[in-house]
Length: 228
Image (cartoon, rainbow, N blue to C red; front, side):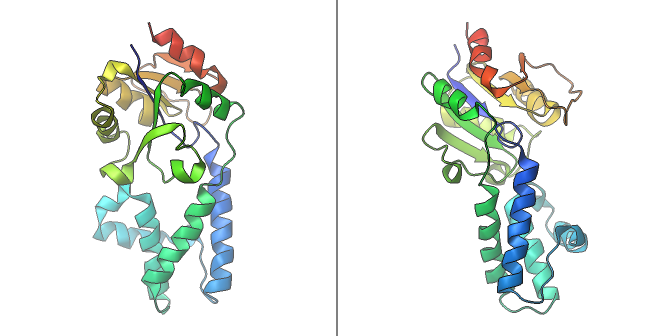
């Protein structure tokens, strides 16, 4: 019997690239207003990223803190005072925009319907926030790679969900768009899996999902086919 449905977020419930592009643009505008003379462009931040990652490799799974540290380092190198405080404010600007998304057609309707019969949660490598997204009324838990210290395909996020819910692996379904980062590790832990086919991530993975859907609106039917 299935008790819990856990979701990847980016590119499973919405297209993430337009969201990030917009957040970057708004952050650039904020810098122009608040920190005149500072040129922020993530494409030119590679040097600072390499420095920060070399000093603290664990930041690889902490996307929010990594970005903040890169911004802080860039500001400090450009002689800007209060780099720590400003980088923290900058990240709030970014996160606010990063959580202004447009759900896939039918996604919210599917979530609302599924939540009537199952406990829902989110397991993500990114920094989307169910509270900012307005999903906390449907999702009872959320874990990010930043929370557990390791991004998918490491199993840590799946173990965190199992421990939190108290269910066995076969009682949880994981829904994701990436065969390698979502489906393979969830299968390895013993969860049931639904792959939302994504032409940008066709795989191949090392394992097969229990069910494949082409549209998020097909999810409830897929779950019911597995819940027997």
